[in-house]
Length: 155
Image (tube, rainbow, N blue to C red; front, side, top):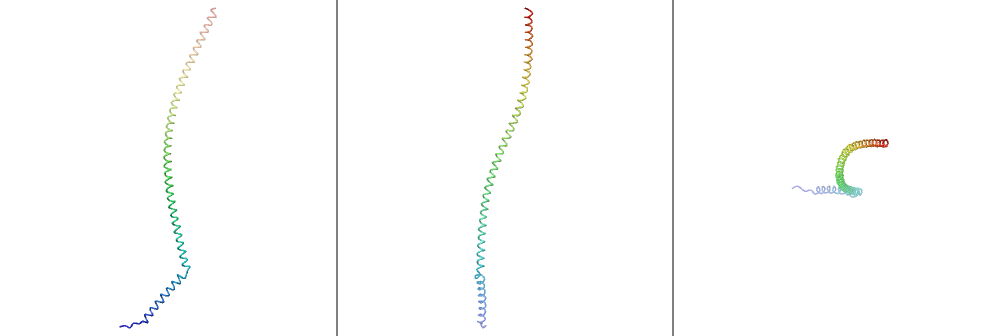
């Protein structure tokens, strides 16, 4: 049997204990006795929390704006569709009016030609009546003259 040396074990235990105490002291001194680091960590955590809140608020605002923009786009699309329909309706009305105008213009031209022909016919008829009237007047004048001479010379 090997003799057991308590001294060595005690020494080893003591060294470990001292190392443990040193490390505990170091941790205590470094982390707990330095309030600036703790405060820095608290401040850092608070800043990160505020940034997270601000980011969340910005995300919500952005989502709301996207929803609003989608609604506006939908409304504008609907307005554009209605305006397109009105424009097509107005274009159809314009085409109808243009066709009616062309028809009226052609009708007026035809009526104008008919009026011109009628004016020519009336003018010819007036000329004929005038000639007939003049001839009749001349005949009457001759007859009256003849009658006058007959009366004058017969008495």
